[in-house]
Image 1 (tube, helix red, strand yellow):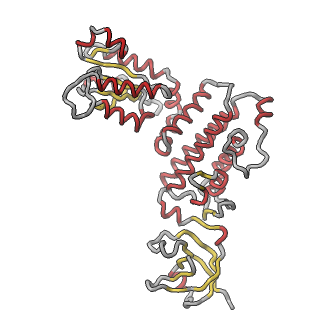
Image 2: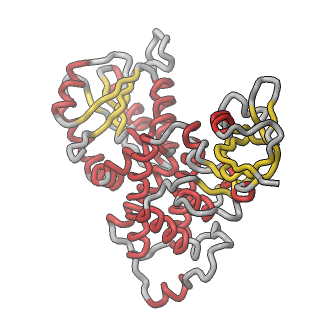
Image 3: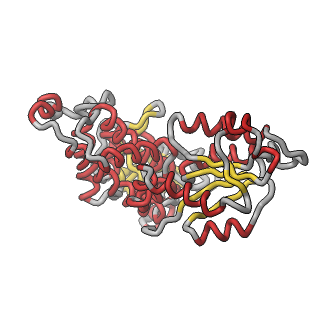
Length: 385
């Protein structure tokens, strides 16, 4: 990805393959949309994928329109004006309509333009000038592996947070807004935990009313007991280096963020720290740690994305030991209370119906009997009476 090309959206009802080929030779990849509304929809879905936009002056609004006019240009121009209030995306007008070239009011309304069949090289050069020196493009190129992972896992908001953090590093800014950036880092972690929960890597108990308990989630993913959530995974997901990095991020950012967990005691006195060492390097350190976590997490989810397999590793702490009797329902399934029992384990131990047992390994039932028995007991011992 070190040779990452400039990605451009071209909005024009008359597609010219020779211009696309020319642009590609110049290091510019072009995606084409015929109408303004198609282009607007594409930008709303994949804004972060593009570095610039080329607009036709006289185009169509809807893909089925037959008559060309300025309406489509106004619609997409207004949308880009709104986009540029938050994230700068340069756009260029590229037209082959000679009737607009001599009209000064067109320039006053829409700005300068480039003429088809004449200004192709000039247009490509202007796009490069606007994009290659833009901070975001430099950042996305330099940290391409990170942004590939973000594109796979997270949304445009996280894409913006990471870009902001790396632009700060790129400019070696000293006037760090700790509360803003540290909160952003915590939100990035929360977003990763939400993905983990979605694929079954993180237990539902680590989220409350739609909010992730970051401390409990980090303990659970590290294979430790998340005591307040009452759960533990049967094996750790985080390797030790990732687990330590997550704990470190939560500890430090909790000192500046309003989202600090009450369980994190003795947070560093960030105000005192800043009065002694007013540098950006603490933020830089945490940023690079979160980048490593994102890349690691992306690879891990690709390999471990089977929800039923992941959920089968969930364990409930306060029910790891459970007493009851073996019973059998009309379908022939063995159960004890809310737990479906491992049929092979019952039969191999020749436990008769009514045997009192001590269940020592409970997990979530992922079979088709889960509506009757939400839990599954894989191991249990007979209680001698």
